[in-house]
Amino acid sequence: NLDYVIVSGARRQENRWDPTQNGQIVPETKETQKRLFDDAMFRLEHKTGDMDVSKLDKPRLNRLVGRNDAVWK
Picture 1 (cartoon, one colour):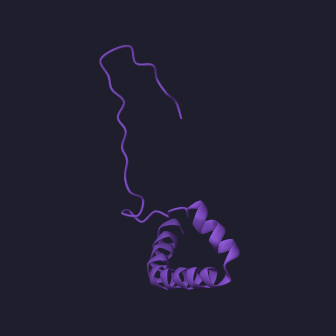
Picture 2: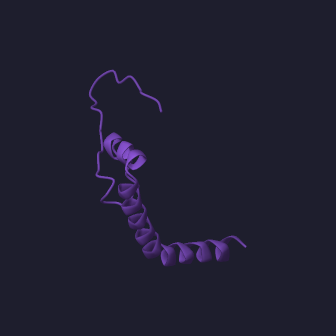
């Protein structure tokens, strides 16, 4: 990443967005990470939620892999 020195007449443009709105993976907070490490029941609940999400995303990922294979073979 580079920063340019602007002599005059310009402003820095900063674009910010919520990562949850566009499907990005959001890192866990420090508190949640600690609780995942210390609390077995919380870890189990979190893991089942991850499995549910993976079941929902699997068909879409398979379609993307198939499309990629078709284009790049």
